[in-house]
Image 1 (spheres, rainbow, N blue to C red):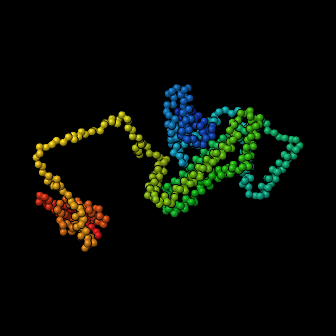
Image 2 (tube, one colour):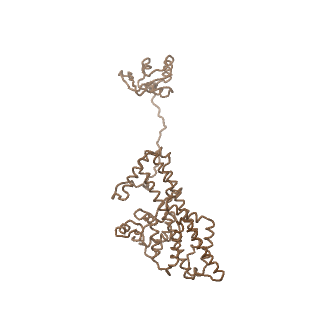
Image 3 (cartoon, one colour):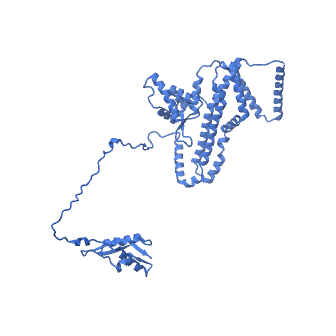
Length: 480
């Protein structure tokens, strides 16, 4: 990368690592994230666990700096650090859980590694790195040589060197590394081991970026479904076949070998027991650094497998058929979002109602009121003996539905169906609207009655005062 003015200015404004170093509370952020993730080699922590650790740190800092220091809650700090504008933490929800988890972003780990390198070193070893460079060059040349004779001559030369060294040892000539050389190589091993752990987060992020680029191609696809499937299955191994994927697969296969694990156990145990190494007070976790590699590698493996599985589900046939219209709308929104990703609109361009709980305070509820009990006077006063007209008890309107049903049965004996209008022609309404409602109730209770909404019929009758009344209603057809 060319470190010109424009590049550095863009990095200063956009790169999360640079923003972290410029943050007002950079000592708090860097020290906490280093202790929570890097020092303890944690790949991910739940929100409750991370908030508890941050609460403890904030409590100690407020005791020494005053109660006004860092006034916000731990959860607020974590959510702020995980925002896209900061990008120091990655907030996500693992499968089968509804609690948020956090992990460091590769940019944050780069900033922490750079801060670690600001501290002084007891000595700067150069011999071990020079030997590593020579070994890397030799491996590249040997691995790319296609002439069998050249490779055979190189192997014979190395064999002669080994034979000569074996002969010198038999003669008592042992070439031992001094303490300085041992410390130099151990320092290089320790740094490389930690850098390898840090690289895993960047490898995972590169896999996510690669997965996102494939999803973007699918989101912007405008061709047929068959062409999309053909292209997708042509690229579904893009993650595993990338440079990142091949290198990681080779590392994983090498590390998963039981023989290699036993060899690493033995080498680390013997090296850590050397007197020249013990005086350096090495980190005890280096004894099990290969297990940390396994944990980090397994996490990366799960990430790659989950991305591949999600990418396959992305084009599930049943979901495509059932949600075609929804997919078209989402694809259009994704296309619009990708178009403005580098130039996001400013200001408020979308509004959402903030969800909230409806609170009802206890004192807002009305007080209990006992129900009203009516007073019933059951005392009956006797009249003076005059006669009462009992005829009002018999002047009530009552429609005999049995009489109407008998009339309907007689009409259906000679016909398969009959309308309500035809029934009323032969037997007009005698009790007005009450009898008409009885007919409609009888029609609703019958099993084979049809209400023809497209046709209407007009029913007329004469009330007690001699006035004619009429009602318009859908045609009612009684069937046998």
